[in-house]
Image 1 (spheres, rainbow, N blue to C red):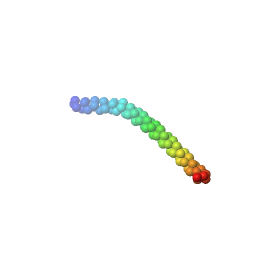
Image 2 (cartoon, rainbow, N blue to C red):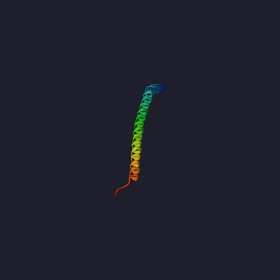
Image 3 (cartoon, rainbow, N blue to C red):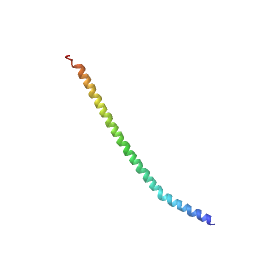
Image 4 (cartoon, one colour):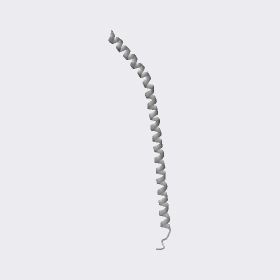
Length: 75
């Protein structure tokens, strides 16, 4: 019957397409994950640098407050 033949051909074609597409999809997903990981790591590094800068600034402000309290005012 022609419909069985068409179904068989369709099944073979589908199988061949999946065999070709799946590795490409896996590669694309892997590349996407690598890119996301890279972007996230850059963001974590940037945020860590910002936090360190803020911490350094807070220490400097605290040091200035301590010095100004210890230094008597003439006026």
